[in-house]
Image 1 (tube, one colour):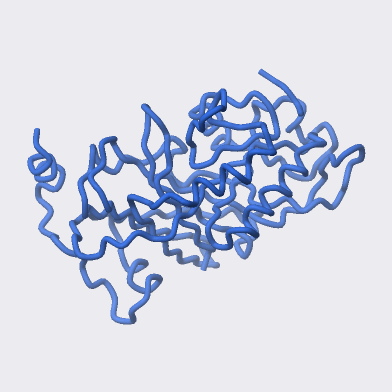
Image 2 (cartoon, helix red, strand yellow):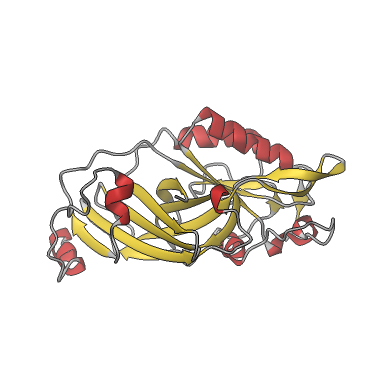
Amino acid sequence: MKKFSLSIGIVASILFLGCDKVEEPNTGSGGGLAINLISYENDTSFVNLTQLTPQQPVLLMQEFTGVYCYTCPLAHAITKDVMDMFPGQVAAMNIHSHYFSIYDDPNVMGNLYDLRTQAGDSIVNMLGGVLSVPSAAFNMKHLPGEASITSNTRANWVGYATNELTLTPTANVELATEFDASSRNLKVVAKYHVLEDMLEDMYSSVFLVEDSIVDKQFVDTAVVNDYNQMHILRDAVTDARSDFLASTPTKGMVFIKVYNYTVPAAWNENNIEVISYIHQKDASWDAIQTAVQPIQ
């Protein structure tokens, strides 16, 4: 392991002042999430008190890793095991950072790609720093027995993931994407539906991850030239520290957010997924629910 240094009713009225939508609009004729949701062109908000069934929980698993880290592939294998155990319920994000010193410097081994990002640096900062790689965060929660939000005790990771996936989400998240190959514009529409009154201010975040980036990785005692890097954080669509939704939102509130992002030509759009989650901020960063959507 590598070491380095008013009443609810009044509030709701204020939040939605000027919004005349009290139920979800019919935004498409074809039926189905991708058709209806992608048709939104602008941010909007409304109240829907009739569709409050929670989704199955989806775990946000952020793994902090490095290319010149011989134990990191062992952690990558645990993330894969968790995803295999809970298919469709894990949003994996492997984060490389400039803060990880020699262990994530591509010049050490002459890597083709620099997987470090400013978005990754921002996440490291917001979670209070990362003392070692590999380590991981689970729904950005400070879990009992851990010194920080990130855990470097790999033996506990499966248990942490399993426990988080027993919790019922108090908000639902849905995503739709539309990619224009000629302009390389990616349109992302995210829907956040609050299922219970919230005591904390709520925020959302949207990130892009890319699979199957083949490059060098230090594994055990040797450099592997054709290592398959998976779930690599590429960038934040929102500010990495989140997009404000509402102050203590109440049951039934729905927020639609529309984003446009130009995908760099060097990225393989066929291997890119959008990850979005609704979460708290400041007092705690706890992610309430997450969604994953491939580029379409």
